[in-house]
Image (cartoon, rainbow, N blue to C red):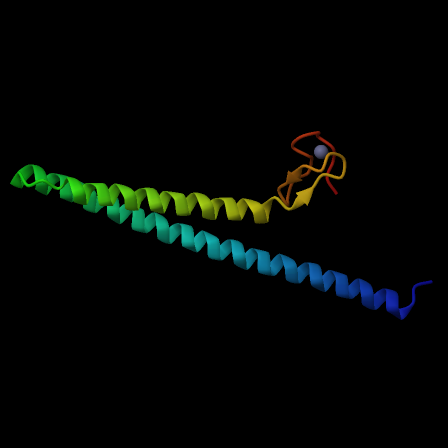
Length: 119
Ligand SMILES: [Zn+2]
């Protein structure tokens, strides 16, 4: 027969698991917002770059160094986005297969590597 301690410790485990899920969700949401910001910044640099090339052609002025700067900034944004996406993957791929140990997405029904049913 279960004692009061069993009940309490079970309730605590569930609460802890729920807490972990919530903070994970918040972290992923934060990362998604950061990605959206980076993508917006990247789009505005692309736009500026287009205008820069156009103006440079029209006026005949050399804009090479400014163009290089834009290209660097776009690469920087892209790297940040890749890094943020990798961080999201790390949060999502937290379920490990009990057979082969491969990390699987939280909602996976079967292991993507060995095909064993996930719990
Ligand atoms: Zn597996």
